[in-house]
Length: 372
Image (tube, rainbow, N blue to C red; front, side):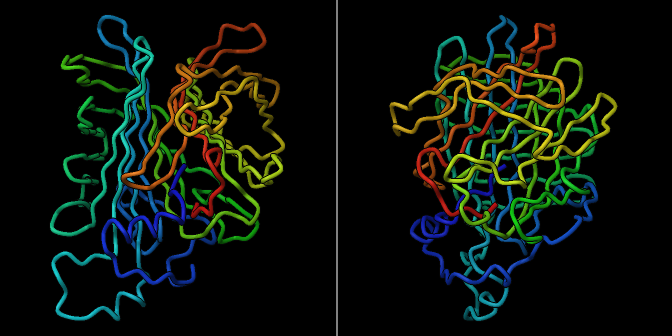
Protein backbone atom coordinates (compact mmCIF):
# COMPACT_ATOMS: atom_id res chain seq x y z
CA UNK A 1 0.00 0.00 0.00
CA UNK A 2 2.67 2.52 -0.58
CA UNK A 3 2.75 5.93 -2.04
CA UNK A 4 5.88 6.22 -0.21
CA UNK A 5 7.22 8.98 1.87
CA UNK A 6 7.48 12.73 1.86
CA UNK A 7 11.27 12.55 1.79
CA UNK A 8 10.89 11.44 -1.84
CA UNK A 9 10.43 15.08 -2.79
CA UNK A 10 13.95 15.98 -1.75
CA UNK A 11 15.40 12.80 -3.28
CA UNK A 12 13.63 13.54 -6.54
CA UNK A 13 14.76 17.15 -6.59
CA UNK A 14 18.36 16.08 -6.30
CA UNK A 15 17.88 13.30 -8.84
CA UNK A 16 15.87 15.20 -11.43
CA UNK A 17 16.75 18.87 -10.74
CA UNK A 18 13.05 19.63 -10.40
CA UNK A 19 11.72 23.15 -9.72
CA UNK A 20 9.94 22.05 -6.54
CA UNK A 21 8.30 24.38 -4.06
CA UNK A 22 6.44 22.44 -1.36
CA UNK A 23 2.78 23.41 -1.19
CA UNK A 24 -0.07 22.69 1.14
CA UNK A 25 -1.98 19.48 0.50
CA UNK A 26 -5.02 21.56 -0.43
CA UNK A 27 -3.30 22.62 -3.66
CA UNK A 28 -3.56 19.03 -4.89
CA UNK A 29 -6.54 16.78 -5.49
CA UNK A 30 -8.20 15.57 -2.29
CA UNK A 31 -9.84 12.27 -1.38
CA UNK A 32 -12.64 13.15 1.04
CA UNK A 33 -15.44 10.69 0.37
CA UNK A 34 -16.57 7.67 -1.66
CA UNK A 35 -14.48 7.21 -4.80
CA UNK A 36 -16.44 7.00 -8.02
CA UNK A 37 -14.22 4.27 -9.47
CA UNK A 38 -15.05 2.97 -12.93
CA UNK A 39 -13.01 0.60 -15.07
CA UNK A 40 -11.07 0.67 -17.28
CA UNK A 41 -11.00 4.46 -16.78
CA UNK A 42 -9.55 4.34 -13.27
CA UNK A 43 -6.75 1.92 -14.10
CA UNK A 44 -5.09 5.02 -15.56
CA UNK A 45 -3.30 7.78 -13.64
CA UNK A 46 -4.90 10.50 -11.51
CA UNK A 47 -2.35 13.30 -11.99
CA UNK A 48 -4.09 15.90 -9.79
CA UNK A 49 -3.21 13.86 -6.70
CA UNK A 50 0.24 13.95 -5.17
CA UNK A 51 0.96 10.21 -5.04
CA UNK A 52 -0.18 7.05 -6.80
CA UNK A 53 1.00 3.49 -7.29
CA UNK A 54 0.26 0.30 -9.18
CA UNK A 55 1.48 -2.67 -7.18
CA UNK A 56 1.93 -6.29 -8.31
CA UNK A 57 3.08 -9.17 -6.12
CA UNK A 58 2.77 -12.91 -6.53
CA UNK A 59 4.00 -16.47 -6.23
CA UNK A 60 5.40 -18.42 -9.18
CA UNK A 61 6.40 -22.05 -9.67
CA UNK A 62 8.72 -23.34 -12.40
CA UNK A 63 8.19 -26.60 -14.26
CA UNK A 64 10.77 -28.28 -11.99
CA UNK A 65 8.89 -27.22 -8.86
CA UNK A 66 11.17 -24.33 -7.88
CA UNK A 67 9.28 -21.54 -6.09
CA UNK A 68 9.66 -17.79 -6.51
CA UNK A 69 8.05 -14.62 -5.28
CA UNK A 70 7.93 -11.48 -7.41
CA UNK A 71 7.18 -7.78 -7.00
CA UNK A 72 6.74 -5.03 -9.59
CA UNK A 73 5.63 -1.58 -8.47
CA UNK A 74 5.19 1.71 -10.31
CA UNK A 75 4.97 4.98 -8.36
CA UNK A 76 3.85 8.36 -9.63
CA UNK A 77 4.70 11.50 -7.68
CA UNK A 78 3.50 15.01 -8.53
CA UNK A 79 6.30 17.41 -7.64
CA UNK A 80 4.37 20.67 -8.06
CA UNK A 81 0.69 21.55 -7.58
CA UNK A 82 -1.37 23.04 -10.43
CA UNK A 83 -0.93 26.61 -9.17
CA UNK A 84 2.85 26.24 -9.12
CA UNK A 85 2.96 24.78 -12.61
CA UNK A 86 1.13 27.83 -13.98
CA UNK A 87 4.07 30.00 -12.88
CA UNK A 88 6.63 28.07 -14.91
CA UNK A 89 8.19 30.09 -17.73
CA UNK A 90 7.30 29.62 -21.37
CA UNK A 91 8.19 28.20 -23.77
CA UNK A 92 8.37 24.93 -21.90
CA UNK A 93 11.40 22.67 -22.18
CA UNK A 94 10.73 19.20 -23.53
CA UNK A 95 12.33 17.92 -20.32
CA UNK A 96 9.94 19.81 -18.05
CA UNK A 97 7.34 17.80 -16.15
CA UNK A 98 5.47 18.06 -12.87
CA UNK A 99 5.30 14.25 -12.64
CA UNK A 100 8.06 11.77 -11.85
CA UNK A 101 7.82 7.99 -11.92
CA UNK A 102 9.74 5.39 -9.95
CA UNK A 103 9.63 1.62 -10.03
CA UNK A 104 10.79 -1.28 -7.87
CA UNK A 105 11.12 -4.91 -8.94
CA UNK A 106 12.22 -7.97 -7.01
CA UNK A 107 12.41 -11.75 -7.19
CA UNK A 108 12.63 -14.08 -4.20
CA UNK A 109 14.45 -17.29 -5.15
CA UNK A 110 13.28 -19.60 -2.37
CA UNK A 111 15.54 -22.60 -3.04
CA UNK A 112 18.65 -20.43 -3.33
CA UNK A 113 17.70 -18.37 -0.28
CA UNK A 114 18.22 -15.05 -2.05
CA UNK A 115 16.21 -11.91 -2.74
CA UNK A 116 17.15 -9.86 -5.81
CA UNK A 117 15.90 -6.33 -6.40
CA UNK A 118 16.26 -3.43 -8.82
CA UNK A 119 14.87 0.09 -9.22
CA UNK A 120 14.21 2.69 -11.88
CA UNK A 121 13.28 6.40 -11.97
CA UNK A 122 12.45 8.92 -14.67
CA UNK A 123 10.49 12.09 -15.20
CA UNK A 124 7.34 11.95 -17.32
CA UNK A 125 8.97 13.59 -20.32
CA UNK A 126 10.25 12.58 -23.76
CA UNK A 127 8.61 9.17 -23.44
CA UNK A 128 10.84 8.12 -20.55
CA UNK A 129 7.95 7.35 -18.19
CA UNK A 130 4.24 7.87 -17.84
CA UNK A 131 0.82 6.40 -18.48
CA UNK A 132 -0.87 5.90 -21.83
CA UNK A 133 -4.47 4.77 -22.20
CA UNK A 134 -7.04 4.10 -24.86
CA UNK A 135 -10.56 2.71 -24.71
CA UNK A 136 -9.44 -0.80 -23.85
CA UNK A 137 -6.06 -0.70 -22.09
CA UNK A 138 -3.77 1.32 -19.84
CA UNK A 139 0.02 1.09 -19.92
CA UNK A 140 2.32 2.33 -17.15
CA UNK A 141 6.02 2.51 -17.94
CA UNK A 142 9.33 3.59 -16.46
CA UNK A 143 12.10 3.26 -19.03
CA UNK A 144 11.78 -0.31 -20.37
CA UNK A 145 9.68 -1.63 -17.47
CA UNK A 146 5.94 -1.74 -18.04
CA UNK A 147 2.53 -2.93 -16.92
CA UNK A 148 -0.30 -3.07 -19.43
CA UNK A 149 -3.83 -3.43 -18.02
CA UNK A 150 -6.55 -4.64 -20.39
CA UNK A 151 -10.03 -5.91 -19.45
CA UNK A 152 -9.07 -9.59 -19.46
CA UNK A 153 -5.27 -9.54 -19.26
CA UNK A 154 -2.45 -7.71 -17.48
CA UNK A 155 1.06 -7.88 -18.96
CA UNK A 156 4.19 -7.17 -16.90
CA UNK A 157 7.78 -6.74 -18.08
CA UNK A 158 10.88 -5.86 -16.07
CA UNK A 159 14.60 -6.51 -16.44
CA UNK A 160 16.70 -5.95 -13.33
CA UNK A 161 19.98 -7.27 -14.71
CA UNK A 162 20.36 -10.24 -12.36
CA UNK A 163 16.78 -11.20 -13.11
CA UNK A 164 14.00 -10.44 -15.57
CA UNK A 165 10.41 -11.52 -16.07
CA UNK A 166 7.59 -11.23 -18.56
CA UNK A 167 4.23 -12.28 -17.17
CA UNK A 168 0.62 -12.49 -18.26
CA UNK A 169 -1.94 -12.15 -15.47
CA UNK A 170 -5.60 -13.09 -15.97
CA UNK A 171 -8.17 -11.78 -13.45
CA UNK A 172 -10.20 -14.55 -11.82
CA UNK A 173 -12.37 -12.06 -9.92
CA UNK A 174 -13.50 -8.50 -10.62
CA UNK A 175 -11.74 -5.58 -8.97
CA UNK A 176 -12.43 -5.19 -5.25
CA UNK A 177 -13.05 -1.67 -3.92
CA UNK A 178 -11.68 -1.38 -0.39
CA UNK A 179 -13.14 0.64 2.47
CA UNK A 180 -16.43 2.31 1.54
CA UNK A 181 -16.83 1.99 -2.24
CA UNK A 182 -13.06 2.44 -2.68
CA UNK A 183 -12.72 5.21 -0.09
CA UNK A 184 -10.09 3.90 2.36
CA UNK A 185 -9.58 5.92 5.54
CA UNK A 186 -6.00 6.19 6.80
CA UNK A 187 -6.34 8.72 9.61
CA UNK A 188 -8.48 10.96 11.79
CA UNK A 189 -9.86 13.36 9.18
CA UNK A 190 -11.93 12.63 6.05
CA UNK A 191 -9.05 13.75 3.80
CA UNK A 192 -6.58 11.33 5.41
CA UNK A 193 -7.69 8.69 2.97
CA UNK A 194 -7.01 7.14 -0.41
CA UNK A 195 -8.93 5.70 -3.32
CA UNK A 196 -7.98 2.04 -3.28
CA UNK A 197 -8.91 -1.11 -5.20
CA UNK A 198 -7.30 -4.49 -5.92
CA UNK A 199 -7.41 -7.45 -8.22
CA UNK A 200 -7.10 -10.06 -5.49
CA UNK A 201 -6.64 -13.18 -7.62
CA UNK A 202 -4.80 -13.13 -10.93
CA UNK A 203 -3.71 -16.35 -12.65
CA UNK A 204 -0.09 -15.87 -13.71
CA UNK A 205 2.02 -17.43 -16.43
CA UNK A 206 5.13 -16.39 -18.29
CA UNK A 207 8.89 -16.54 -18.21
CA UNK A 208 11.45 -15.74 -15.53
CA UNK A 209 15.12 -15.19 -16.33
CA UNK A 210 17.47 -15.94 -13.48
CA UNK A 211 21.20 -16.60 -13.56
CA UNK A 212 21.20 -16.86 -17.34
CA UNK A 213 18.42 -19.47 -17.30
CA UNK A 214 14.95 -18.96 -18.75
CA UNK A 215 12.22 -20.66 -16.73
CA UNK A 216 8.59 -21.15 -17.68
CA UNK A 217 6.56 -20.24 -14.61
CA UNK A 218 2.96 -20.13 -13.48
CA UNK A 219 1.15 -19.18 -10.29
CA UNK A 220 -1.04 -16.42 -8.92
CA UNK A 221 -0.69 -12.71 -8.29
CA UNK A 222 -2.31 -9.70 -6.63
CA UNK A 223 -2.59 -6.12 -7.91
CA UNK A 224 -3.18 -2.93 -5.89
CA UNK A 225 -3.88 0.54 -7.28
CA UNK A 226 -4.12 3.48 -4.89
CA UNK A 227 -3.91 7.27 -5.09
CA UNK A 228 -4.02 10.04 -2.52
CA UNK A 229 -2.55 13.35 -1.36
CA UNK A 230 -2.82 13.45 2.44
CA UNK A 231 -0.01 12.58 4.85
CA UNK A 232 -0.46 9.90 7.47
CA UNK A 233 -2.09 10.92 10.74
CA UNK A 234 0.17 12.54 13.32
CA UNK A 235 1.97 10.03 15.53
CA UNK A 236 2.03 7.19 13.00
CA UNK A 237 5.45 5.69 12.25
CA UNK A 238 4.57 3.13 9.57
CA UNK A 239 2.26 0.33 8.55
CA UNK A 240 2.07 -3.44 8.12
CA UNK A 241 0.12 -4.52 5.01
CA UNK A 242 -1.03 -8.05 4.13
CA UNK A 243 -2.44 -9.51 0.90
CA UNK A 244 -3.43 -13.13 1.51
CA UNK A 245 -4.82 -15.66 -0.94
CA UNK A 246 -6.39 -18.73 0.67
CA UNK A 247 -6.78 -22.05 -1.11
CA UNK A 248 -10.55 -22.03 -0.47
CA UNK A 249 -10.68 -19.11 -2.97
CA UNK A 250 -11.07 -16.37 -0.36
CA UNK A 251 -8.68 -13.43 -0.05
CA UNK A 252 -7.80 -11.06 2.77
CA UNK A 253 -6.34 -7.58 2.61
CA UNK A 254 -5.52 -5.77 5.82
CA UNK A 255 -3.33 -2.92 6.95
CA UNK A 256 -2.20 -1.97 10.43
CA UNK A 257 -1.31 1.70 10.98
CA UNK A 258 1.29 1.74 13.77
CA UNK A 259 1.78 4.48 16.34
CA UNK A 260 5.15 5.15 17.96
CA UNK A 261 4.11 3.27 21.11
CA UNK A 262 3.19 0.17 19.10
CA UNK A 263 -0.58 0.59 19.30
CA UNK A 264 -2.82 0.66 16.22
CA UNK A 265 -4.64 3.64 14.86
CA UNK A 266 -8.42 3.00 14.74
CA UNK A 267 -8.41 3.47 10.95
CA UNK A 268 -6.54 0.16 10.60
CA UNK A 269 -8.85 -2.11 8.63
CA UNK A 270 -9.18 -4.76 5.96
CA UNK A 271 -11.33 -6.53 3.40
CA UNK A 272 -12.47 -10.14 3.19
CA UNK A 273 -13.23 -11.28 -0.37
CA UNK A 274 -15.42 -14.36 -0.75
CA UNK A 275 -15.10 -16.97 -3.55
CA UNK A 276 -17.84 -15.26 -5.61
CA UNK A 277 -16.00 -11.90 -5.42
CA UNK A 278 -18.27 -10.38 -2.77
CA UNK A 279 -16.28 -8.12 -0.45
CA UNK A 280 -16.85 -7.37 3.24
CA UNK A 281 -15.15 -4.46 5.00
CA UNK A 282 -13.32 -5.43 8.22
CA UNK A 283 -12.99 -2.90 11.02
CA UNK A 284 -10.13 -2.63 13.48
CA UNK A 285 -12.17 -4.52 16.10
CA UNK A 286 -12.53 -7.55 13.81
CA UNK A 287 -8.77 -8.04 13.38
CA UNK A 288 -6.11 -9.21 15.83
CA UNK A 289 -2.47 -9.62 14.85
CA UNK A 290 0.35 -10.95 17.03
CA UNK A 291 4.03 -11.16 16.08
CA UNK A 292 5.56 -14.59 16.76
CA UNK A 293 9.20 -13.85 15.89
CA UNK A 294 11.52 -11.10 14.63
CA UNK A 295 14.42 -10.80 12.19
CA UNK A 296 17.24 -8.25 12.21
CA UNK A 297 18.47 -7.12 8.81
CA UNK A 298 22.25 -7.43 8.47
CA UNK A 299 22.08 -4.59 5.92
CA UNK A 300 20.04 -1.87 7.66
CA UNK A 301 19.99 -3.28 11.23
CA UNK A 302 16.20 -2.78 11.22
CA UNK A 303 14.28 -5.34 13.27
CA UNK A 304 11.18 -6.59 11.44
CA UNK A 305 8.37 -8.93 12.45
CA UNK A 306 9.02 -12.29 10.77
CA UNK A 307 6.00 -14.38 11.74
CA UNK A 308 2.43 -13.65 12.73
CA UNK A 309 -0.78 -15.07 14.15
CA UNK A 310 -3.71 -13.34 12.47
CA UNK A 311 -7.23 -13.68 13.83
CA UNK A 312 -10.21 -12.61 11.75
CA UNK A 313 -13.50 -13.46 13.45
CA UNK A 314 -13.15 -17.00 14.79
CA UNK A 315 -10.41 -18.01 12.33
CA UNK A 316 -6.70 -17.90 13.19
CA UNK A 317 -3.99 -18.00 10.53
CA UNK A 318 -0.28 -18.58 10.93
CA UNK A 319 1.84 -16.52 8.51
CA UNK A 320 5.52 -17.20 7.84
CA UNK A 321 7.99 -15.63 5.36
CA UNK A 322 9.40 -17.85 2.64
CA UNK A 323 12.70 -16.09 3.32
CA UNK A 324 13.67 -13.73 6.13
CA UNK A 325 15.79 -11.39 4.01
CA UNK A 326 13.32 -9.81 1.60
CA UNK A 327 14.31 -6.25 2.49
CA UNK A 328 14.07 -3.55 -0.18
CA UNK A 329 16.77 -0.86 -0.05
CA UNK A 330 16.00 1.80 -2.64
CA UNK A 331 18.74 4.41 -2.41
CA UNK A 332 18.69 5.05 -6.16
CA UNK A 333 14.96 5.92 -6.32
CA UNK A 334 12.80 6.51 -3.24
CA UNK A 335 15.65 6.40 -0.72
CA UNK A 336 13.53 4.25 1.61
CA UNK A 337 14.24 0.88 3.21
CA UNK A 338 11.26 -1.44 3.74
CA UNK A 339 10.45 -5.15 3.82
CA UNK A 340 8.34 -6.64 1.04
CA UNK A 341 8.13 -10.40 1.13
CA UNK A 342 6.42 -13.59 0.03
CA UNK A 343 4.73 -15.56 2.81
CA UNK A 344 3.00 -18.88 3.41
CA UNK A 345 -0.29 -19.19 5.29
CA UNK A 346 -1.67 -22.10 7.31
CA UNK A 347 -4.59 -22.49 9.70
CA UNK A 348 -3.43 -22.26 13.30
CA UNK A 349 -6.31 -24.38 14.61
CA UNK A 350 -5.22 -27.60 12.94
CA UNK A 351 -7.46 -27.27 9.90
CA UNK A 352 -6.06 -28.07 6.47
CA UNK A 353 -6.60 -24.58 5.06
CA UNK A 354 -3.48 -23.08 3.46
CA UNK A 355 -2.55 -20.15 1.29
CA UNK A 356 0.12 -17.72 0.13
CA UNK A 357 0.53 -13.98 0.11
CA UNK A 358 2.72 -10.91 0.48
CA UNK A 359 3.50 -8.67 3.44
CA UNK A 360 4.85 -5.12 3.43
CA UNK A 361 6.48 -3.57 6.51
CA UNK A 362 7.38 0.12 6.61
CA UNK A 363 8.81 2.37 9.30
CA UNK A 364 11.07 -0.24 10.91
CA UNK A 365 14.28 1.19 9.44
CA UNK A 366 13.25 4.63 10.74
CA UNK A 367 9.99 6.50 11.14
CA UNK A 368 8.98 8.77 8.31
CA UNK A 369 6.50 11.47 7.39
CA UNK A 370 4.53 9.63 4.75
CA UNK A 371 1.96 10.56 2.17
CA UNK A 372 -0.49 7.67 2.27
